[in-house]
Image: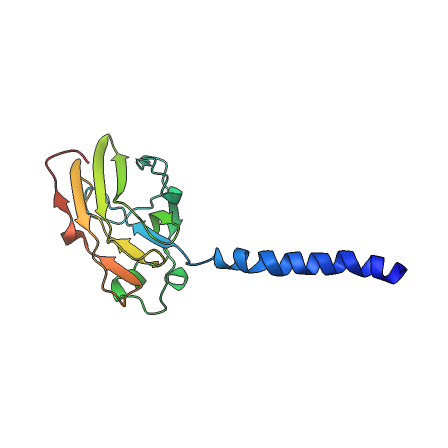
Amino acid sequence: MMRTKRVLPLLALTILLIGVGPKVARAQICPGSQLFYVVRDEKGAVIDAGRSDLKYEGDGSEQTYRHWGSEPINAEHLRSKEVPADISKLNGKVALKNQAMCNFKDDVKLSLTLAGKTMNLVFHVPKLSATDSKDFVVDSLPFKAGDYEITLNMPPDTWVNFYPAKGWQKTTAKP
């Protein structure tokens, strides 16, 4: 009888863990998406996005779980072991980074101010399935005040893609 009293709580705990365990495991469905933005000065040279005179902010969207911040690009931490040469050249450069759980649901916005000039940017992200995760590495134009947008198309079987500065378009209205 005494042995049964000791075994019952253990048995109850085991049944509880079996019932809850699969629910917890299913919550981890995707690694998340990353958007890196390489910042350049007015002459077109890559600059450290963590420098104190560069101010930046997003639109406060709740869809991202990490808002804009500075971080070095590390090709080994991207979703694919094969990355375009343009990204490999940027390895170690400090860029601005934003992340989303699984993927970005809406366009991503960024406002940058350097030397009193402000660039307002809109990244038009692709519509992906609920569990797709992609990495975007976006180069910038030489820093110039104004409103700009870029469309980030992603081939279906590609996990990491580089977007050169020539993809940016000037817009007439502030994003």
